[in-house]
Image 1 (tube, rainbow, N blue to C red):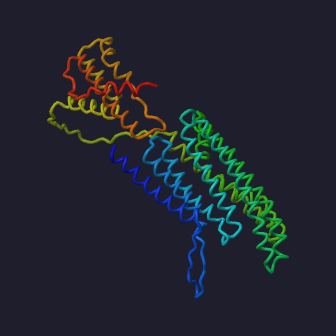
Image 2: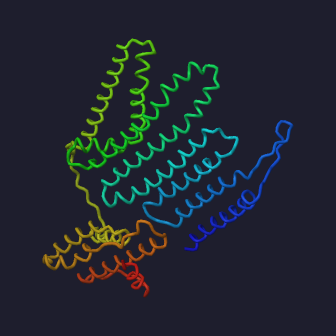
Image 3: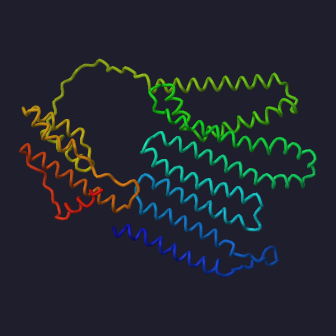
Length: 415
């Protein structure tokens, strides 16, 4: 416990010290540094780094605290999200610097808000898939729709800077009509259409556990490759919107060759899809009958000190330490059956182990809570084993229990 306190206190002290220095020197007052550049003095205003550094160290500190203080399935995506958001926020706020090009702000904004959406998607996925697995693909579909809206908005913000740079080119009369006809409309439509298509494809995850083998294959193969689907759909739709029309009208290439190339690509796509489904069927649907080989039988005699008792002891230890009870129940039932115990008596003896359930860890909680729950579960398992062994007149396990264990267990079991 003291070690964990030190792991939290030290980053907190460093964070407060850095934040105080940044606020004092970069936010509350203007800090200018003179640098000799090529023989002439140049003044650099460091105050512009105040907001980016503040956001960076704050979000990075949140990632450290969440990693060391919290426990649960949501901790990893939350920690990684804070860390990636720390770097993205620094770039986003630093893009306000006057020396940065105008198109940097929309692009860094897309990166910043995209990471926020990605973090929310990963964290919420851990929650909804435990409630019902069909909620996860629905959440992914909504996520891609938001990404498409954000990408479309970013492109419309970036394009004026691209058009302004082309306007200063000596080939403006040639490039401008081409750019306006082939980039602005098509790319914006492609972004919207490709992300909308990916949102629809994400819904195939609803059938990834369907009894029908074809639906199950489609659901698993598509829902697990949404990033590749987004990129492929973008390229295919952009080809249909702009490149194909350009090749037919302006490139001078024989149209028959273009059509033949398209059909060749379609045939290859169907071929690889068939090979993928065939491989999936062989691995998951066909069970290979593997038989042993004939060989000379040699009788081997090993001298072991009571292997049944050793196995029983190992199964008890696994149950106490890790909660593995299936093998112990089977072994104990067979042992009682061979001892001529009646079915009713066997049921009464084994039922405490069968009905036992660990106190669950919280989905999102503190580390000390998880440690206490683990200790209480070990204590409860040990008591159950002692009760079972006492009922069959075996010597119970020696255990040293503290007086406070019962109170601690009762406190944690309250829901």
